[in-house]
Image 1 (cartoon, rainbow, N blue to C red):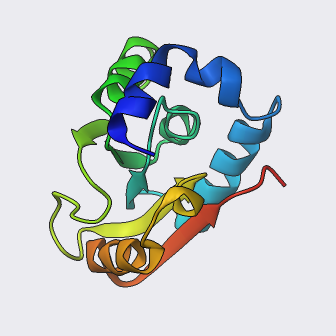
Image 2: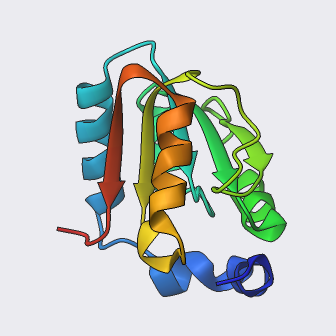
Length: 142
């Protein structure tokens, strides 16, 4: 899908693509435990923050990247005032505008099945990860 398609869907995305109740929190809690405290985490395809918001609530230092500006705008508009905001970057998963080896973990949910060249995206994720870093990828809510 193109950035334009996601830009057009941003306002309604959470209603149309929400996780089942409690799943975002459950995934965030498990990811935060797996990643550990103090690590830098990159979420590719951050979208409207379905995972970013609960990760930030668990104290994860998060940078979120998304191709669609309106998805990032929707995330900013819905951030809880009482938690730290993740850093947000508009960018392409094939050419992440971030330093090599900068992240302890990379997370993504419902992203890689949409990519025409997922091996190239995996290579870019590996570039962004520090040696020994963790890549957590989710596709189904289970």
